Image 1: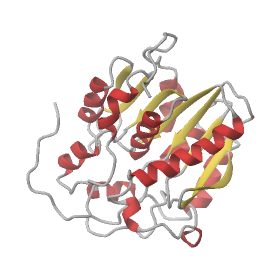
Image 2: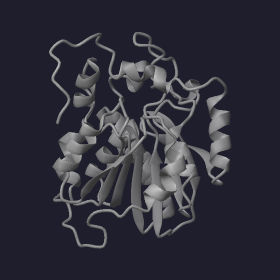
Image 3: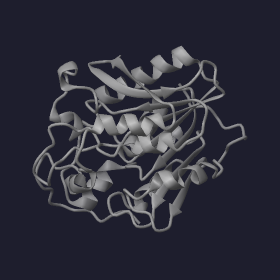
Image 4: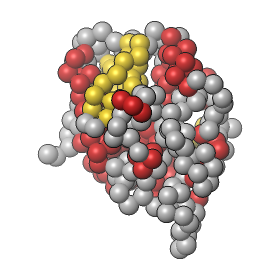
Length: 289
């Protein structure tokens, strides 16, 4: 069942503001913490120019890998409180990076979102709108797509798989809808319908952001599995359930007992990765150009 409709919206720039405290993370240097997490998987930090942004990435891959698995970070530290936007959206815990570090896949790429980790001085296009109401705007998806294309051109993998955590799940779906080289999609606590999520939290909408559920039919041929925590109160399971229904026949929902939005997903991730993908091994129809 979809979250209930809410007729009255709150402050204009409060999309998912209730998530702010959960995403605030701990004190300390986020980049130093990310480097330490990445070192466990021998991921090397890099920067790549993509559209108006300079994106921070971590990569461990040789050319012509059988599979390049790409991890996309969540929305990060977008808000300090329900009413105060963060001056820097860099996540303190970087759940997407932790998922990548727990993956024993030989070829890995992690993409931070625009304005995360890279110093603002080298990112003059960055402004708070890009981690609030423009977080999934066309220019953001263009930049993420351009960064991914640079790595694909350099590494030339046989298969490309996308994994997105939270808001990174939205990015993964939106990228897959425009590309023709994505062989699989996985999301963890993915925000797959930000309109419904914002209604749930009684916060304002993001009309200038693209919504993944709108492109669900375009990715219906791609094998995909969406993991949702049974105790997730940030992105309820109903969101993933509705998306999977609209992305049939190759989309599956897996509800994980006892897991909330920011539970220890990395600890479970190696076993969750072994869950089979619908339509994998079967010849599925390609997307029409």
